Length: 185
Image (cartoon, rainbow, N blue to C red; front, side):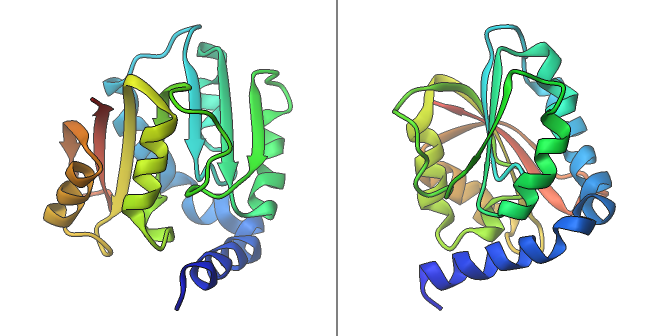
């Protein structure tokens, strides 16, 4: 399957399950977010990108602490649901975009989330390189990877291939993902 066929398949899948996404995945997504939050610093100068934001589960958790959040996803229907989370936040913005072609200049964000993203991309290294391109020097980049799709060794190798410094890696047995807190260097 070529790259664009894979991307269309992922878009269609998430468009189909958008109505039930939160019921199906919110608990797991919140668990990953709760693993990440103690390892990052949020303040009124934080300019954040959430790549593969889905329904925006992250937004109400952090929006009141930061300058601005931009959430991107390829599923229009997930983004429609994300708008429900953003109604009360003037600092949250939703954009329909491809994670491999982020519509931002270089060195923009000081924190980029990539939660439950990589297994949905045809070329995870390209995705990570694009995330790195848009992040500022020393930016923190929390990244997760499904254990069923990545071994810990392959995930670690992928992060290192993207030249991300792994600050910590959580492999909690209860989570279906590895959670890495990385930094652009």
